[in-house]
Image (cartoon, rainbow, N blue to C red):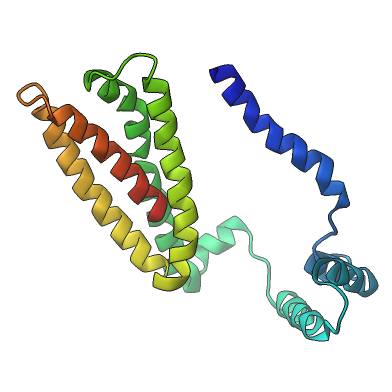
Length: 201
């Protein structure tokens, strides 16, 4: 079954490959990059239907004017630019914590935790699949929550809850040989960690 599950990801790529030629180019790309206003209007009509779309075209023209007045910086120029220093620090911090938050360790050791929790051997791949599904669903949930609470609240909340879950998971893994129910608690914590990761970072 696993080869079929892995091959199924190619199905969406095939659908995109077949359908993409029938989609119009981005109106902003046609107007800003290509400078073709007529093609831009045609793409807008195809995307949003007939009607007066002059306001959207004016917005794209403003964006084009802003882009032409802004200097494009190289990588070293971005690093040297003092006005961008804090944005760069924040970006580096977010990306570093994203890599070191523990999600890779959770995925790597989840099979062993499920095995220790006395799950049947043939069920463990499906439980692992459930973990991945949890991440997918929580990412979809995040897209609805981010407009309501903002990125900062979700980042702080996600990392705080993930730290709490990792602390509890460390404790349950240490005590799993003393209490039989700790195995199942560890499995629940793995699912919670993945959900908080999808909602937060």
